[in-house]
Image 1 (cartoon, rainbow, N blue to C red):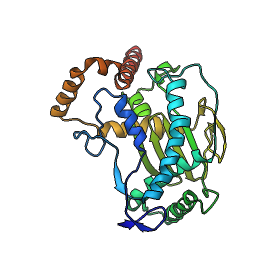
Image 2 (cartoon, helix red, strand yellow):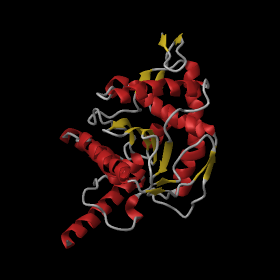
Image 3 (cartoon, helix red, strand yellow):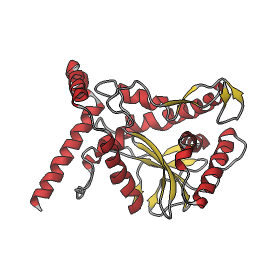
Image 4 (cartoon, rainbow, N blue to C red):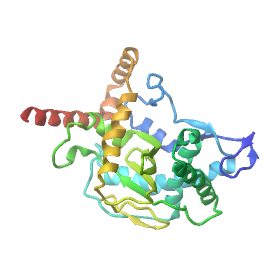
Length: 305
């Protein structure tokens, strides 16, 4: 028994995923080893994403319906139709139409990230603390249907793809595992600086930002999610500071968390070889190959300079 974080009623609490179960199911199905690794303890393989005692059965069902909507309307269609086997772009560029369930799904992710690590997000900036405390309650009421809007801050959704077909120079500071991060990683945090405050979450090739201070950003085009409308996977991401965070800072942070012991490296290799056909056909392997190709291109470019 406990107090449900969403409806505030005392009830039996479920083992609730912070990030949706469907994503970890997809990761396992498309991986070489059928095992997952998390940043907190990469040397211990796991079968599922992180869970906490958070919601009653009824509220868990609310989120389940939103997750099913996103899975069927965006996740599977984008991966299966808009991306190829290497998760690079295809010729399909049609916009996807959506209703308010998309915004509610994204806000449910951002809200869960805040409530599960709320104490970590108290800052020395009192203005930030007031915004965060208010935002948690505003989003709770929105998800419960007790208010019609999400309060201050615009929410953006990004469609990511493999960078192997990109044009131009590969920056020397880019992570050697950049595609693995962009396309296979789950992530979520609150980001703060002197003048910025935003919530970030990520499910493989889908990335979500909700900006609180300032309430929006410039130079991201075709990315804002409203209560209903259409959104195109063809987007322009031209904001330098946000791109620095997404394409450089966060991948590097992830790299630093996944240092495997010699024992685990041997176990991973053994598991790959035990089912070589599956391993070679896995999305994990194909994306790793594109990362290796990009590293060679980057090295050749460096040698030429």
